[in-house]
Image 1 (cartoon, rainbow, N blue to C red):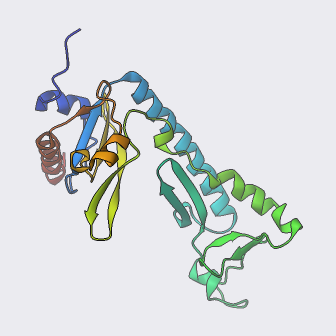
Image 2 (image 1 turned 135 degrees about the vertical axis):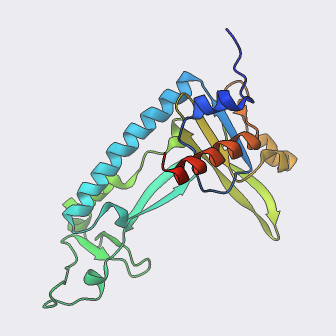
Image 3 (image 1 turned 90 degrees about the horizontal axis):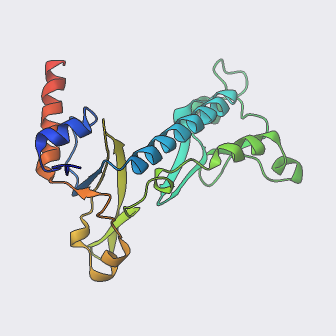
Amino acid sequence: MTAIDYDDLDVARALVGDGVPSKSALPAVWWLTTDPNQIDAYDRWQAAYTDHLERVRVLAESIGLELTDAYISIFAKSSTILGFRVPARMEYRRPGDPDYLPVPDGWRIDSKTGRLVPSRRTKADRESQANKDFAAITDVPNVRNYVTGLPDSIYLDDRDCGGTMYAVNYRRGESCLWAYSGGDPDRQSGSDRRQAVIDDSVWHRMKLSILAALMEEKADRTEAGV
């Protein structure tokens, strides 16, 4: 079997396809894999994530909101919906106003966060349909529970009195899966470096010049309307 020359721009272009952004800062590092197990894992996550968002959309619309009103917290392998944005016509309008939107039955505006969440004051509240519906959409499929071989994030001690956690993110290519991060593991200290395990047999670290060239080509096509 002929080895893939990942450092060849033509090869990378064919593998990645048109999925690079045309306008974005270059990451500190990016990797690419053609491992079918990793590609399949990402595709399974994408299908589960799309299905989950549809269920969030249905719930949001049932209480007069939209999918984009959902608050989601993402950390490492955990993605959690924390509640919904409260529209002005619910928070500030009053009964009798033409565009007034009442707080849905079984829900409340949290005084600390300002989010719309299910009421949990009484036992009846906690067993309400609102709580059941919300519990069903709280845990969002996280790609890091599907794809393997890279750390969830790269920690760099790059600030006074602390450091920065740079997430590792993923994109589906035409015939590959690629990942990127704002943190370069080569800049990590010894102990942090040991925790950021990278499976070099699966993931190939790519030259940033390759990604820069692909992004420039995408920008040219976008400008030309191609």
